[in-house]
Image (cartoon, rainbow, N blue to C red; front, side, top):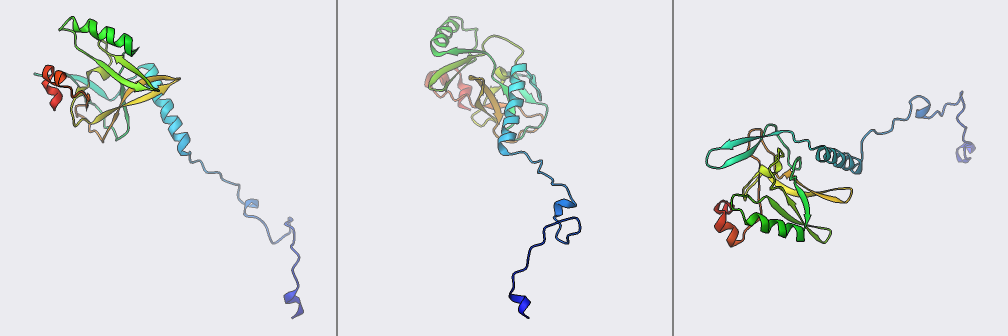
Length: 193
């Protein structure tokens, strides 16, 4: 009975000890899960590579009677997925305004200039020059299935389109150009829709 109140001596774990650790029998298994930061970095790196290599997958250009060229999904996209870069010449505001004035001299020249703010500066992506890049051909809709987003690669902004909702194969890719000026709507009534 007197032994009950005496502290027991701890026996160090030796080969013959009864108190062995689980790790003596099983190796420690570290989680192979990636952190949110690692996943975001990998996603950014993937988009960086697609942009720098000019890879455009999962879409095709079709001609629509009465509308012209349009871009359609050839695969499904999930909300938030990278679709394509709005590729063109990256200009600062003063150069962009000069170029826009030049384009205005020729009514046959379409306007594919997208202005945006980045780090307190105004930039423009001028995609007016005809190329095989598809981002410049995505049409306008106030209820589009894509939205623009800025993507930084080594301090240089790139304008990209991402899925604003899930997109089915065969759907036309559309985004809101955001131009609501009376002059623009008078010149391009389709901006109302």
